[in-house]
Image (cartoon, rainbow, N blue to C red; front, side, top):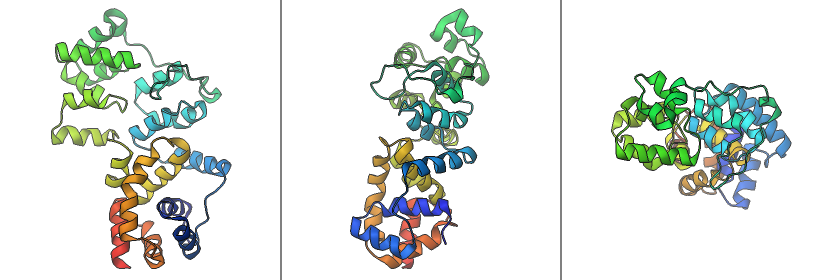
Length: 278
């Protein structure tokens, strides 16, 4: 008997096959064919209440500009003060959107993080240049909120490189534009720190390069409600692997279901291992 997390994870992969294969695999492994949205939302709330997600996953959810989802993802924003400030101000995250986002009643009592004194004295660029520690950098960078703010930051850095603390604090914001982040650094240590901060290149990179597989696949399955616009990127990355190593072989799928719960590698490694063992 599969637990709920494993069931959701395996079913995400099953959904990448054709309808006939999916029906046979679900019958063989005891999977249900999905669940009502109401129950899925309840599952998401339970899962997200105890298990943290990478900062970029939280951002993909904020991009939906849905007040209820904003409230759900709020506890996962952690020390991302800029994101927290934007949410309580009702600023949109979705590409091309400009209309204010209503603040959910669950967040009505949440106050905006304190505005840094350096920002009040020097303005945005002045505050970013005046930092002398990581703490002051994070505080100043929390005032970078809109697309215009990010454009201002890029222009300022191009004219005269911002301090190292500032660049690091900006780069670990999941909403930092990729082109700007690339200009801040690309060496291995920098990449490692971004990974530690939960900053991902995109859903495809998350699906193929992170583990354990069950947790990643569970998040992606929940993403069909939480960040539906971004899930296809992950599906497209995993679908060729599923077809090549599992295909319509029910025995291979049964092996995958048995392995999944205790497998610590990535989703591609899980798929390949199940296919090979079968």
